[in-house]
Length: 167
Image (cartoon, rainbow, N blue to C red; front, side, top):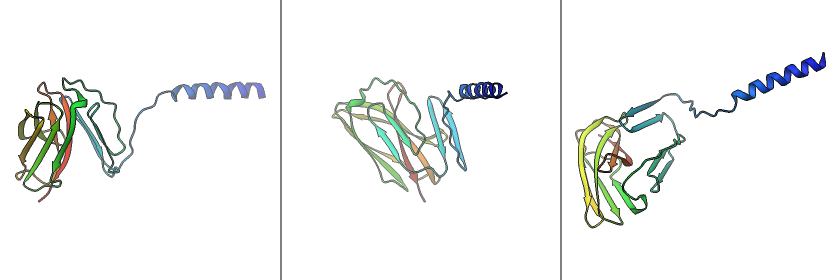
């Protein structure tokens, strides 16, 4: 009897361990969203810790504890990105992007909401000497959080910079 019970227990243990071999990322939160627009994926939860990961090597931007596996291919060498600044943040009437690279560059940029919808604010960004200062009018936007997307000329996302519009 003990042998059968032991074998039965062993069989159940082996069966239950088979299901434990997959690891899925899950977040338990009060509210959140996941949206896809073209080749852009946005995912957020309410109440996540405000931490940030910015990398120039693969152009990864992460906020909070959601850390996706992202790979992007670009014709721009990621090591050439030297510095970017977006100010003021939060902003009321306009935001200014200051971009510096080790070489001349040409990009496109646009402001999108968190669902990935374009807000109609699009600008080319170019710097023959490796530096560029671009101003974006945002006074007409509703209060909220938006992203400034910087893309290669072929549409490959290079950087997503989060900013807040107030009043």
